[in-house]
Amino acid sequence: MASLPNQAQGRSSGREVTLAQRGFLASLRQPRARTRLIVTVIVFLISLVFVFPLYWMLVLATHTQQEVSAFPPPLLFGTALGDNLRRMLDAFSPVQAIWNSLLVAVPKTLGLVLISALAGYGFSRYARLTSAQWLLSAVLATLFFPPALGLIPFFLEMKVFGWLNGYLPLIIPAMASAFGVIWMNTYISAAIPRELYEAAELDGAGPMTTFWRVVLPIIRPGLSALAVWTFIGTWNDFQIPLIILNDADKFTMPLALTSLSAMRSTDTPAIMLGTALGVLPVFLIFAFLSRQFIAGLTSGAVKS
Image 1: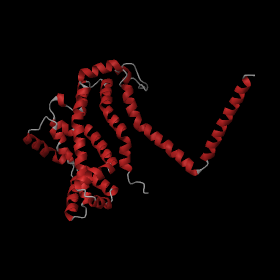
Image 2 (image 1 turned 90 degrees about the vertical axis):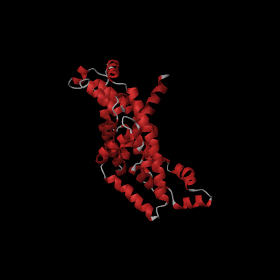
Image 3 (image 1 turned 30 degrees about the vertical axis):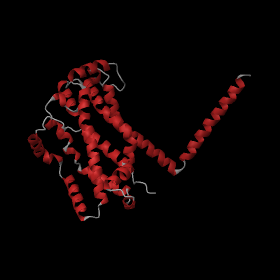
Image 4 (image 1 turned 135 degrees about the horizontal axis):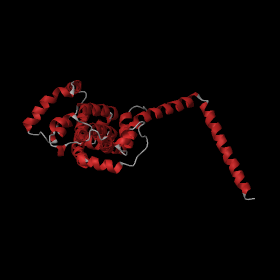
């Protein structure tokens, strides 16, 4: 007798599954649903193409050199992580390299975002002035010059200042970003109506008070997007630190990974492990600010 309720429950659950399958198949008959399903599958497959190298990097970091060199290569995690970590630590210190990169990336990002927001606010608020239009055009024109063109003059200038083998050349000049100014000017012009400036003036707020109390809270998604973009670009920067830094103890993560690759040129697992530790802070920063970053990129895409 006790089995009867169980059988009835099994038949009802089977009937629910069948109804769900029928509903799913019926929804696929609609062209919009089929298109959405195809797009989802395509996006999922494309995402696998980009995610697989990162996954394989982690897999190789847990295998021995013999296992990495075998064919077919391993696709699942191994058991040699401890030995690989010991050999990697013998070649370079990831903690020191991460700290050095943070010493450069954090102040540069904060300074660049603040200066770009102030400049973008000024160009947006006083856009009707002819001088502001000319200055904005001059800032935009600097984007057409490749950075490598000024590499030698930049090095000579930093030598005159006595800033070589230090972090100041990597932070102070980079705070003046033409891209950041153009980005914030475009964002503020789209997000802040001129009526808001006039209302703040009627309330007695000056230009700086308006910026800090009115404009800044509204443009937070744009600031977050610029901050994430700047931080990732600074963290991955290799050329400028290469010509400025000489002391190995001051190397940022890209330079430290180059040293690891030179010392362990045939030790693929140790190199993969160091690379994984090098990209970990970038993933954490993006995960923490991903919502604001996407909001900043898509702001204005949907009109109300």
